[in-house]
Image 1 (tube, rainbow, N blue to C red):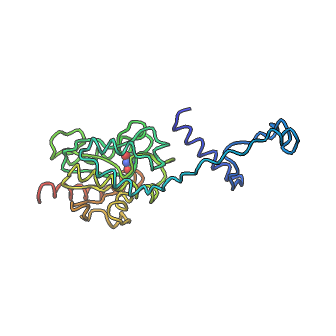
Image 2 (tube, rainbow, N blue to C red):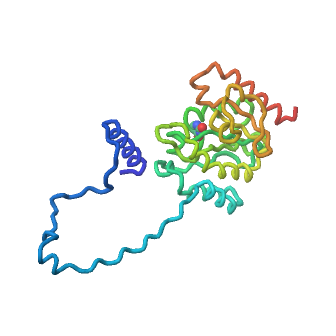
Image 3 (cartoon, protein in one colour):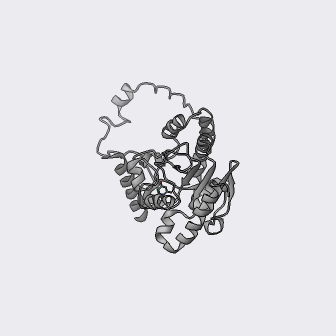
Length: 265
Ligand code: URA
């Protein structure tokens, strides 16, 4: 079975059992009740053959790892986007990694003046290992094309560099959990420091929550904020625009705000 399938099937089975009323895990492995000991423990033979019990191996308690501290420690050792990408892919403390097919680090031109930060990979991104390649991603490309920008551009003035708050797909595309965002935040901070964009675009509520500690995209969008000392522009997420095409008016206005800032006006 593919690892992704195993993860999702196991999770679905667990949910089903909880629905049926199972609320306690008794043992990790099944016990074969038919496999009786060859001699009853109280018999004479058993007593004669009994050896003194071997001393229990000393229990070495694993020190508890704080994933956030660990992430902060790891990013200090990264000084290029390549080494950061490797460090993200090797980070073992986020459970989403187990269920993901790929670690989705970034796409586009790292020299771009603008860095776009979304939420987390969806199904298509998980399959292809690149951010924003599904329907929402195609809309994102069309939006930026309208102001002459795109991820395949070589000129940093027109180019985009694209990433997400989380590099792994959450199961059934659920919202990222606060602990998942907390432990991946040092990585996205370092990602911004290393890419050194002039402007950050925050796509949707999740990236605003992670990088501005604020939600409420309807009020935040179109208003300049600050992320690590860089101007940051919150915008409606393209997935939201697919569901609410009327909000494309505001998205267009935000794209013009971005373009004006890039042109120094
Ligand atoms: N939505 C996101 O926020 N990021 C992606 O990469 C794809 C969809």
